[in-house]
Length: 386
Image 1 (cartoon, rainbow, N blue to C red):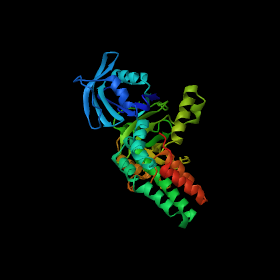
Image 2: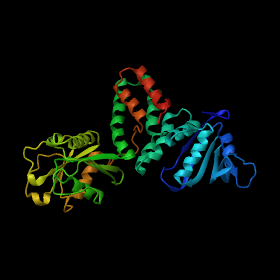
Image 3: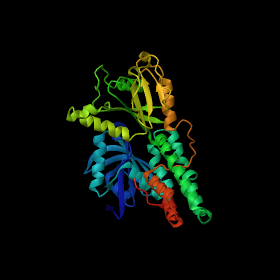
Image 4: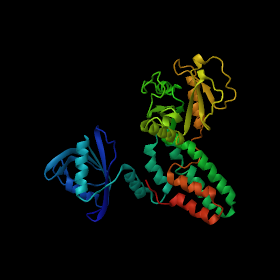
């Protein structure tokens, strides 16, 4: 929208829930004119919106006070409005701004606009500024920060500067390695999804409760108690895990009822779109003739009552008792190991956005230098979307 000769946008930069303070960012060429229409300074003097000033006053709508606020003048066209954190107050202020032609955007888009204003066409630096707040661990934030002038930015610039003397096969191989490393880095940056799968009554819900440290899943002796799925976020140090407890995979339940069939479909979908599957097996029933899920960690549960069972044929497996907690430390160590995050070098060159990842995959598959030139240029200076 155009307002007073320039595009103005506004976004709520704090969480939507009730809080002591909420922050609204106002940005654009006409933002000073918009602010002068809604802000009344406490000292009743003409407000000075010069960069660096902090102003105390009220947001006014038709001579009615909406809230008492503090306005931070962060630039000639960039203002931070700190108001009370009641969602109703925040909504009223945003509605008022919208009525004056201000475009309401989300916080990520606001960060992108602010980053473009200060960083220009440095796409990797812009994306770092946008996505850094979403990193769920300190290690993830370090990975993103490293890509700005070193890491990804440095690698792309080196390719660009030396393209004529490089073999396209070497560039493609380097890009392929970055793609592989990026998949692990993304788990540290955004978290990893782990799904508990296995036959009904194998002890998945008991194991779920054991890993998350509280009784969130209903546990009974009835096979198939969990019809849908539950999830919980667990801090595993340098990685945050979202753990899903799903309905046991059982083809017989597909035909039992529509509800059971749907829960089976959802369990299968979660299993097929996660970072790691914990394939929970009731070890007390033995493992003879059983098919194991590929690329999963087999959790041999109920080892306290299973007796002696030969599991030497299983490569990725760990024996536990979710009931007595036996083997749980070993399970956690194995999970971190299989996710690849245990000793991951935080200074590796990686992609940290979907845009970067797609371009890097294209670079790993190209066999023409002109295509490589275009892709690398896009990585460094392409348009950023959020």
